Structures are given as structure tokens and as C-alpha cells.
Length: 154
Image (cartoon, rainbow, N blue to C red; front, top):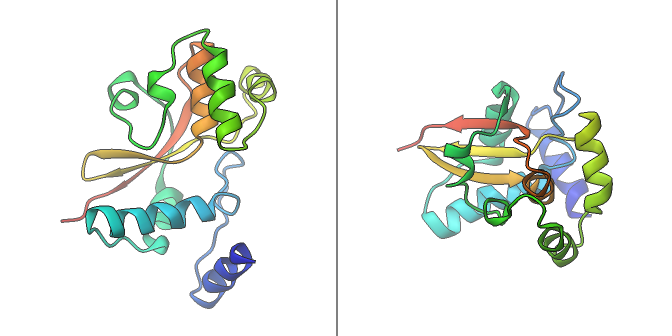
């Protein structure tokens, strides 16, 4: 029900969740985007409307997640998982009731996975969506493609 209300808000505000990239799933990740907006407000006193985050992701390009960003990425356990640590990935997936890492592994191998979404807010990188995907990539020992949206706000 909450998901439907969010879509109604977007329709009322003329905000489109459509993108041309099949690997960027704004519609499917809208609740995660809203959660990040709320967390920034509640925990850091930074007001970033959902609309602004959506618009930033629409401008984002696919890029390889480099170690410099991954090691300091907030809101994820993936930067603590090493290649081959499948037991940790399964633990994370089960804790959050997420996709089976074996299925995600096959999607990574084919390249047909929804890209994790990262917000760069004033140089602080926060994972918006895709924790299990990043954990799976870490256990596979690969650097995944991601979308990094950038917002500079004082």
C-alpha cells in the first residue's frame, strides 16, 4: 500500500520514474530512495527530497565501483566481505530476506543484473539499493557496475 501511495505522489508531482537504462530500476527501488531521504533528514539533518534523489539518478551513468569508493561506502556490509566468503553473503541475504546469492551470481555472470545505486552526497557515499548484489559481487571477487548519483548540498 505504501508503495502505491509513493507512485501517486510522483504522478501528482509530475516526476517520472522512467529511464532509458534497463539496469536502473527507479520504480522498483523507490522505497529505498525514500528511506535514504528520511535517514538523511533524521540522522544527519540534511533535507534531500525524494524527487531530487530520483533526478540525480536519472543523470547518473553506469560505472565500475572502484575500491576507493567501495571501501568507504556507507549502509552496506559488502565492503567487509572477501572473495569466496559465501557464508557471509548468505547470512546477509537471509537477514534482510533478499534474493538467493546463487541466482544473483548467475545474473552477474551474464551481466543482466540491476545495478546497485549509490548516492554521493558532498563526497560521502551511501548505498541506496543493492546491498545483496554488492555482497555477491564481493564474494565473487568482481567490481560491479553501479549507478552513482551526485548531489552537492551545503
